[in-house]
Length: 485
Image (cartoon, rainbow, N blue to C red; front, top):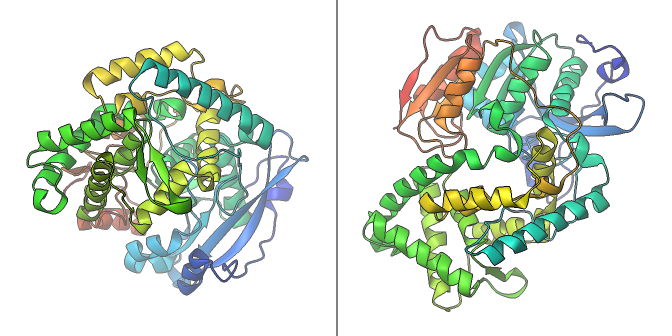
């Protein structure tokens, strides 16, 4: 048993029962895990670490074991962010990215509490996605009423569980997993929100981590409900870059021959949706997208500047432009699946988990007028994203957090990865975290509008630098700089 926290010995001393990962005949994730050689298990943790004899939560995790046992480094634990994103399926991807170093790690991926296979906080919402405030004061007032109702539904449906979804409890869970696996220290790769979880772990459990990679790391001061408003300038820049890309391919997508034409066309689509919701799809998969919903698709499509992602977004925007003319449109299979998650009840578990974490981490302002003023300030320069990223959320009506946010006061020797055009966790966030952790190194990828780099973007400079660090545990002597392909 690895080092345990006093009073929690029965959790740290658990014995794991490793078994297959497939849950049923349609479980593609489980099948992919088993094909990669993974096994799965469950770990029990307290719901409330202040009451270890009370209710418990079961965490599901997967593991691909080290095969080079003679040169084994230890456990490499993963978190894919979100917040609220499942991680249990991540080991095959990271195993591939690690190349020859993969044989020296046990690659372990728990689904965080209340996420994926680790049980779910489901507020019973009729949808799971974000919403823009829309174009008018009346639309904003409807958003206020909607989010007040969402918070009330969650309180009635999920009880007090969301109060225990915060990052500090998730970090405590990570440490229990470390102890159960018999490790005095673990290595860690955290993506996006997962990088924030890693940061919190360094502060709560110093000395219990070895090699840590924080990929797309947010500024800890922007955890919780301020996460989205912090992205506004970078989101706008990524949109301009995408619009110019789409203009160069007007013959394919028909969105405009210049970036300005593409932008104007999308603004017209949103204006049309405000007057008359766009009808997309047929039958049970019919969606009515107004000006509170159309910007969400644009926002989600701008997380990467890879051609495949930019092309998918261009196809979606062309579809919406067609729908704005009143003609029937049928979205692609991937877009239909996305619309179900965003605007159908299937998305409730994911949306519930995301909001539970954000609301548990930091208190949000309660006055709706605060959000209206923020929206109008953002709308002036960013008409598409100001009303979306500045909108009110259920956190305005949530119960107060049980704990204060984590203060970053202890140095930590970690490797931070950040792209200069990251639209989700801006490059300035990576710089801010680097300054808070002076013993860290900041790897910069120049010229990329990309969120999440290691094993995701295909940049050999980034991947090789991470692999070298994970292999020998030595941070680079200086802050590395890579360039977009």
